[in-house]
Image 1 (cartoon, rainbow, N blue to C red):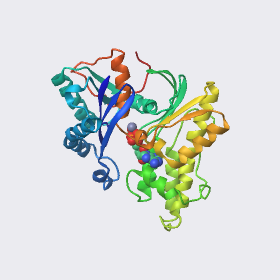
Image 2: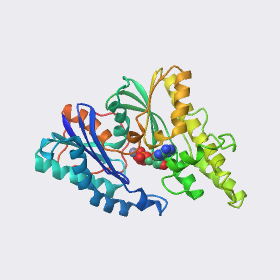
Image 3: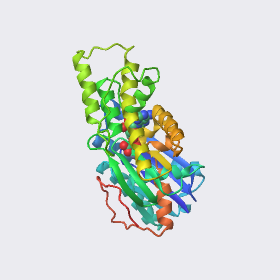
Image 4: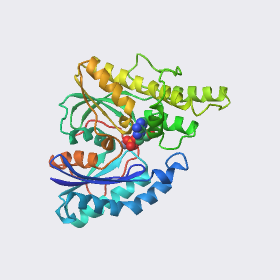
Length: 334
Ligand code: KG4
Ligand code: ZN
């Protein structure tokens, strides 16, 4: 089925075309430059930028895929979770297209999209597998028994891992989004230089707010006085503290549930050190590891089209009064 996917849940306006589980195009207009001067996403600005970008992004996705609008057989759009104003732009566009073209529409959970990104690769996992969804808003481990069949095993009690990266970057005046900057700077640093805390050992849940506080306390003690030479060590140690708990808890979840396959997805899964440490841990524990290519870890519409195609093929349909949902936990559905 030839499906157009539309994603606008946060600060990326994205459209993609997927057919029979294969990605034919993947276009992303990022708003990073606009928001970086504020140190984070400004929701009102994000909505306005989505309006400007959405039509050209869809046109580009169709042209890259080599198809015209009239050939599209179904539309998949992110329904939530996300910024409500941003979601509504994608949703209104998707509904207008579905109505005008008289083709089916399906609203998709963004987290389900992140997990499905892994199926756009050559080598794909088999069910059941454990999935760590780690992004700016979520840090959840699921037991995935089938498409649409998720059981939450662990989640963050406070900040998401991506938020921990973004907040640290803000404290260190490194700009937004923090994960990408810290990933780069930390490459030259010693991950053991600063002993940052690893919270909630022994629990399936995560907590990252103490880590951020411990960085803040360290900076306050020094009167925010650190040299540029120290930055790689500080960021590498901070990154290591995040990655360590993500790896450890995901590996424990696989053991506890007798699972041999792990999927890691979401924006933070783009992190170089995370990919390295997960690969080592998977090798040691004889587990098959699946992490989407970097461009499919951060927000994109190919993942939305991928899960949308599966849903549409299974007969899922949404009506034109479909609304956005800003908080929408991932639960098993038909
Ligand atoms: O999935 P995503 O693009 O959007 C959400 O659904 O939240 O994830 C964005 C998050 C941000 O917090 C960003 O700092 C983080 O992913 N991120 C990274 C990297 N690239 C993006 N974190 C660590 N290392 C990266 N390379
Ligand atoms: Zn996301």
